[in-house]
Length: 241
Image (cartoon, rainbow, N blue to C red):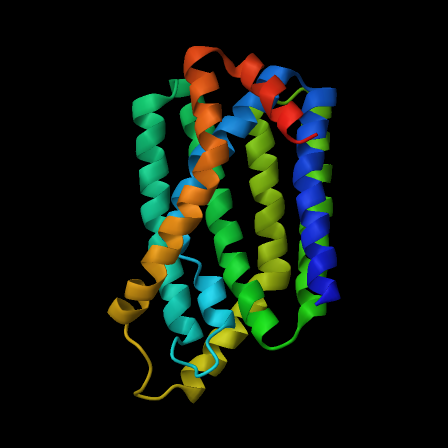
């Protein structure tokens, strides 16, 4: 469990570090744009993510197969990407449409990784989770810092972050997730809950998670609408102090 704590702390510090890089090497407006993109995408993905990792980790009787949960996670991610793209098309300036869609793909990658981490946690492979989170933290900060140092804008920043997450997912997480799915298929039986019964438990969990993050997201929406991204950047920086 200490390994999970260390990995989670590194990942949280890296997310804070990205804001520091944007503030020091970029400008408050870029911080505000980045914060707004995450504030839009995060609640949607928490809702469609439905806390499936927690459901899998606490599934002592094996009612929810890992393959079935990964399928639901994939469907949820597709729905979330469409919803986020719709929000971008209706609410944001056209220049922010592509960055938000890319952030949505980044959150989809993170969502798959989260469920793989849940499977590793369930089988006691805590060091694998720590290694993945540390690698993702280092590559994310390095990629963002390099792009900003070269004069890149918010589009280049989110592309760099997404690419770093995808790289770690392909190297460290996808092979383990695929192996778990193969093992789950070989050992599966006719029993187990179907998708409808899983959704009956998981959707309320997703709603609670979404409502929890809206408490910090709504002020960002208001600042973006009534002030500007520069003010939002200052607010976001102060919020992380």
